[in-house]
Image (cartoon, rainbow, N blue to C red; front, side, top):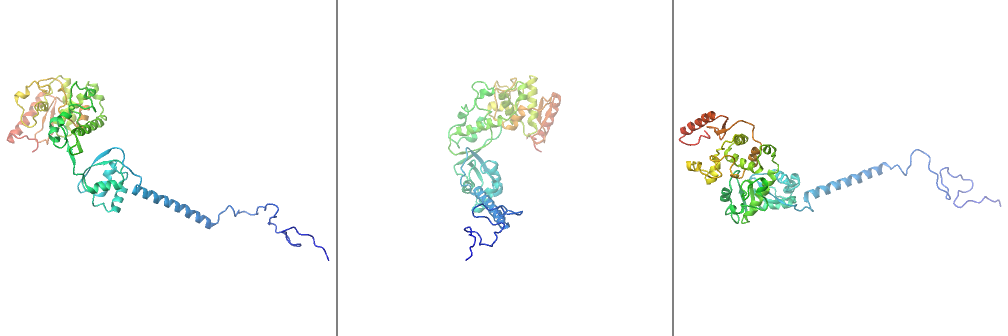
Amino acid sequence: MSERPPRAPGGPPPGERRPPDAGHPDRPDRPPTGDADPARAPRPASRRRLALVLGGGLVLVLVAWFLLSLFQPFAGGGKGSVQVAIPRGSGVGAIGDLLERRGVVSSSFFFGLRARLSGKASELKPGVYSLRRDISYGAALDALSKGPPPNIVRITIPEGRSRREIARIVDGSLTGGYLAATRGSALLSPRRYGAPRGASLEGFLFPATYVLRRGRPVSDLVNQQLAAFKREFAGVDLRYARTRNVTPYDVLTIASMIEREAAVPRDRALIASVIYNRLHAHMPLQIDATVRYAFDDWTHPLTDAQLHSRSPYNTYTRLGLPVGPIGNPGLASIEAAAHPARTRFLYFVVKPCGNGEHAFSSTYAQFQRDSRRYSTARQRRGGRAPNRC
């Protein structure tokens, strides 16, 4: 018998050659020769699967964001509330835009979409609402579909009205007397604006539309007015007024006269210039409205006795400004009082058929001519004011 050489366990039988790329069981395989590494280069099918996974994940993220934005499961009311007046005939798009501008909802688009999906787009009711900031779309839709609460009172205070006039608007809707509530407040000190000791809140009660619950204390309204005044007055540039030794309280006093005299916006700064020029020339202001304020009479012709009264508000008998504002001016008149037009005007009178505009003049002779023109037009109309013809 012939002997054969022994085989290594697991090796090839005698006479067979080991493939050049086959690894040995006792040592690591040699790396394959060639340009591509199958372990590192994914196959085309693998790349497609990876793209599908990534694309699917992105779609899921977008869907989750969309649903969270639409249904807002974690939304809650923010701090504070705002008054929102929904006009009659407003569509859901206009309502959404209004709510977004007022800070009630975060997106007009999602509000409108949520309204349509919920079937409430046609159920939103007009009216005045008090809504919290940053509430969910669902909460806003619930409130607007129910309509404004029946116990809400809307109080509109026109520009320039005095405390006594505002009291006639307010009293009966809220608890307490407006005049008593506006003698003073811990929220605002008139003396900080240059007012004399004992001054009331006249001039600081900002005119606007306010929404309150019926029967609430009238002090709630006063507090809202004072807060609105602080907010608006803080943005008024008083640098020019200071150069003329005009205090913030004087600005309010001038603005209150402008509010009563100006019937068109363009006249405000011109009337302010007349007041500044007369103060500089040490001339009496001769503003009828100051006398009317003293007697709380805004409708009847002024009498000689009233024009010659010794009231501290009578600008016919006293030089300088009256002792305080004769009403509560709006922002436009406050701005005019702080920034008068630069003119030499000393007089003004209503233009005949001028729709409320005034004729301004720097000489008494021109003022007389303007006054005669007005008187003639009034006589032709049988004694009626010829403001509009």
